[in-house]
Structures are given as structure tokens and as C-alpha cells.
Image (cartoon, rainbow, N blue to C red):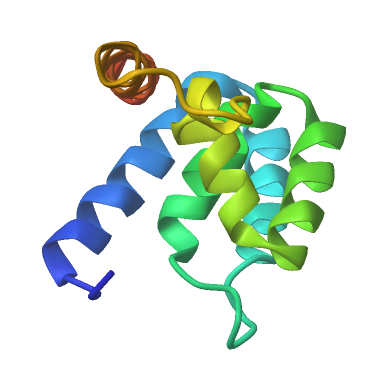
Length: 119
């Protein structure tokens, strides 16, 4: 995925909004943000803004889970993206027929969009 300044800004904005929504305590929120910034420094640590959002979705408001999923992301960020953005598809060993696959894709997308944009 090519880096786009507008997309990056949007993802940064979403990340800040989600952090404020999930962590009302300023100290904890800054700590979580620092943990999330621990991902993205390595050459193999791609799409940091997107992965940080995925970590938050998976971890919820659990500080230890943020640490755990950030560690997993450093090992293979693709797992974090799959688990957060495509949970139904990621659990499938064998893809269902085309209609069921489309329903799964739509449900995964709706779930992620709802999580991203809820207030």
C-alpha cells in the first residue's frame, strides 16, 4: 500500500480519537500511545498507523493487551491486520462458497467501520 499523506493524517486523527474514547485517563492514554509508537520503527514494521489502530481494536482498553498485541505486530503485522480487520475470514481454513464469502467480507468490513467511527 502506497503511503498517502491524506490517508496518514486521517489514520493519525482516528488513532487520537480512539485513544481519547478508550482511555479517559490522560496518563494511561499517553502510556498506551507510547506503547503503540513502539511499533513502526523497524524496516519490516509496515503501515504503522493502520497497525496501531488494529492493535487498539484487538486490545480494547486493556493496557496489557496493548503491550501483547504490539509485540505480536512486531513479529508479523499481517496477523494483527487480519485479526482486527478480517476476523471472520481469518478464522476460516477453507473459504465458503462465493455468496457466503461475500457476506463474510461485508460483515467484517461493517464491524471494523462501526468500531472506527463510533463515538
